[in-house]
Length: 330
Image 1 (cartoon, helix red, strand yellow):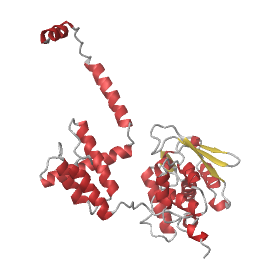
Image 2 (cartoon, helix red, strand yellow; image 1 turned 180 degrees about the vertical axis):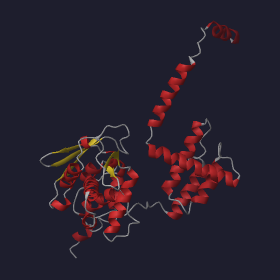
Image 3 (cartoon, one colour; image 1 turned 135 degrees about the vertical axis):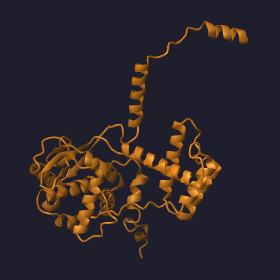
Image 4 (tube, helix red, strand yellow; image 1 turned 180 degrees about the horizontal axis):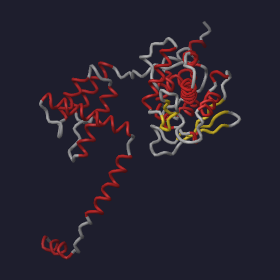
């Protein structure tokens, strides 16, 4: 039998080696798509996580690649008091991805007893509550708008704050909006979100922003005023403004949106530390729910796909809304 197999293999036609140039082209093409499979922010987080684990292993005298489940468990134990459970879970994912890419078994799986039980113990002792940025409510947004500076900078920031708040946009979505994505109708604005955190493949969705009851806080009027003041015909919607008051062709970086929110909060007399770009989105979820909006209607505006995710924003704020204790007749 062994001889027959050998003879069959020997008779099989040889496969020619690929052309080196063509192999390099195919490799580069595949690597480009592999990088595109994850958002840039996710890839940056993975790289930072791996560097942290690698440095920790170097300091403690452990091997980082390949690492053992026991090493990962020791790492978790040291970070348990200072890091959130969600951060630790992402660190495990990063460690596993690097190992698999290098052809090693994944050592950070919760199926490994040492890893799984350590993570479970951290969650039981320190809890799993997520400490997100504080939401902004309508009253606070109004105060921030009143404190905005005059001139083009104030016009832009008014539009950004109101569009971000009424549209429940992520900061990355705000930064990625183009003038062509904004369509004005009789009812208000229809804004096309081309890509988002939960839509990495670019299927896109439309978000409606109705006219506000007060002209000073109307997102439609504010956006229109910014487009006219900046003379925008195409390209990025929210742009940088230099110190001379000139509108740049480049879009605002998503990280700068948090700075705009903080500055406006501080100008309104608020402590800026607990607020960031995400405070607009979180505030929409919380305020609209407190004002009677249904959870599914909130999800339609935010683009959330999980009801549980939306409930994380409104948890604690709806204790007295539709409370069953009001039906007791007390």
